[in-house]
Image (cartoon, rainbow, N blue to C red; front, top):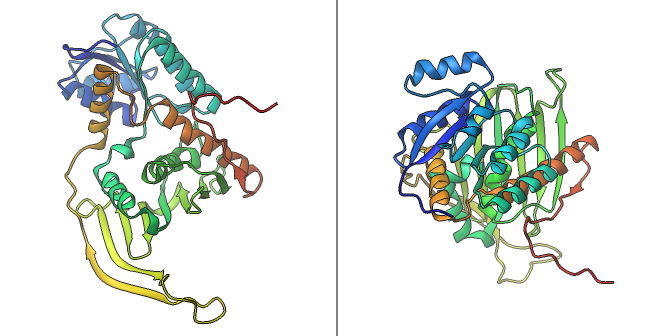
Length: 356
């Protein structure tokens, strides 16, 4: 892969809420040169022209792909179009950063990984929370004391915004599945999920998802487009502490409550099944988190991977790790909460010979 000395020519496809942020960042970053943007909606193109008057706009996706200056494309279109758009970009030898979820089907995501591999191009997914300084701080605590971690849970609720392309579970739980995978450095073995269509718009807008890991730990996720209380929290419960990442708390994004309960393992049980428990009560600590913009760090990482040829932290395989959970979740919702095994697959894993 070429080592760039010049800024990387980038185009943004899709200028919705997130797409506009990519336009801003790729204009600001010294390692990038924003060649232009494309959106099928004229009103979004007008908005880009108002906010970023110097930004060029492409009349079509074909015009964007035909421009030899475009070396990479950030895709911020609706989830249903990710596969076709990303596939076309990769086939035309463009590096691709695609918003989450990578695709809406595991088989499509595997196909994109293969196209990227064949063409020697970077394929990266926008699991932005992996680049969040507060989530990274939380991971530090998990890595340091993983043996005493009991379980994780997350809550992501608000009134909307209601999407037309995916349900609330796909829209919101995608974040938390990627966060849990990153914190634990493992993917779930099984999923149990229930969903409800309380708003009557033809897709689930409320969901409760439980994830089971090989280590015996559980993760639980509650998502909703119908809850007037906006919440964005991930909690890790340990034997001697509880750590809360609150994305809405600008001042104290991570808080450590030094309080917990764990068995005293070096003493015999008092009687049948009675173990002594040690309860700990201590301080509440707010570790210092450097204020950084996660999306900016994600974009910088994308540029670094193009320059160095390194695999992205949230590449195609990590995108698939989230999709296999989402597919199992869909099956569980259809089965009214029945436990569904997650397909254990790793893209590009070495194939093992099956016994005759």
